[in-house]
Length: 329
Ligand code: F6P
Image (cartoon, rainbow, N blue to C red):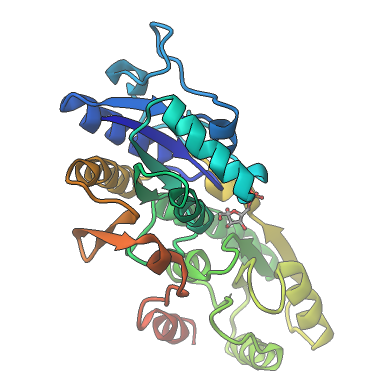
């Protein structure tokens, strides 16, 4: 079997470890792997990873020492042409031309949505791996990249706390998560933030101000608020403005972590998850499965049909918000 592997959408730490797992697992049992560069965009441009022998195939050596590398050696992108029907038809023709029998896309909801659309024109098998820092996909407890992104954000909040303490200030730290509060909630809990603002809950300015005044009365001199970029009121800048207008009792500063959270050497948890899922994706293809994402639920490897992955908003784990409230009060 000839398997095409690619990364699509926002990069995530651990994507490389997943590519390595796909290559090692497939080659180990006598199959071939084509590395498609730049996601769906690169597929349409017929851009492939070229190995040391000059062939458009990935070798065992082409993924040496890859687990510890952030980003993705296959590059990633978002493709406008692939969003069109003609783009998807052309992609299917290109896959046939290069005799690719199966695909392992590594990405998020947009990537798998694209895989479903492609499958209407192509009869090859597709098994996806969840690669996104947002952890916003059903069918897996954690996505590849989430653990590292949280680690990076926690390190930043810890450092900012030092300055907040020294100057008796409040920091609003904006983290990524377009539609999801996972990174914000986990960061807030791990870093001991006083407040978290996320799209899953109503952000109430009055309530936050009352809470801040109460904390100040009790002698608290530094405050950390973690804001998900997707909060329904807007990002940290807007929230800062609203809080100041409503009488915030602390001087404030805003820090947006942005793409910093997507880089860096993957945490061990991401490397292990990526290795398990990459290997499982290959084994699932060989067992004849298609149209599904490989995931890990309660420690067990699972397959979930693509539409189920992105059609429901992934709920936050039970009790985490309440725990944060208890810790911060
Ligand atoms: O989906 C991953 C993500 O990092 C989101 O958290 C963020 O909103 C988005 O990608 C940013 O995308 P881009 O790299 O295109 O700016």
